[in-house]
Length: 222
Image (cartoon, rainbow, N blue to C red; front, side):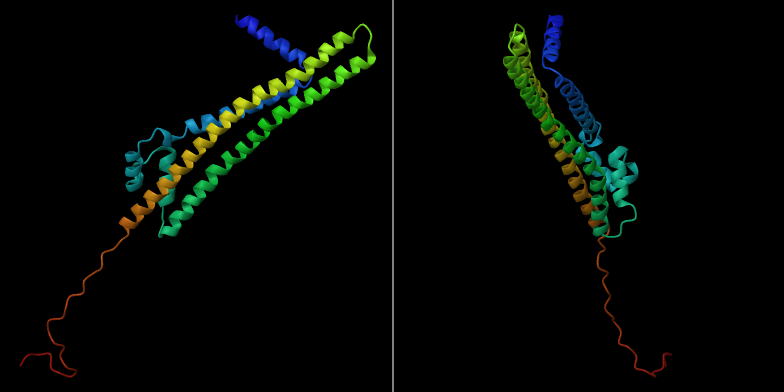
């Protein structure tokens, strides 16, 4: 059963013409990039970390571990104001998220290109079909069959490559949003901890119970 399926798929790829070669390369690029991003998010520590644990780490940064621990210590090391904390978290976001965004843009370009290459195969297949009609002869039916195959199979394969890629992009965007939300929550908890730690209670000034001796008065009792 599996051998029959593989044989049918192989025949489709052969009948689709030379445009099936860039489609095969494109599908490898799409799914390798998508899997790479999904593995990147699955390896992030915040997904398996309980909320109470990382909130405790904010209060005791020396106990923090892993990637989250590095972020906590970096955003609290030698900070003197709330502005320093916000700047540190802005640096973390600027380091982590743009890499993901660039890969997502590249992945979207690849997914968009798959149906377009399939459309190119359709145009080329129609040209082969019309050429066979113009030439005529005994090989006309054979050339028409090859042209129709080249016109139909590439767009079908292009859509089959692009649709799962779109689903994977949606999943990656959702994981990116979760990671960004976690960094925002971590920043909020760090700011609250900073406010509690550096709030100093006002010092009460004791009232003076004795009158001030006038200038020039003797300080030695009579």
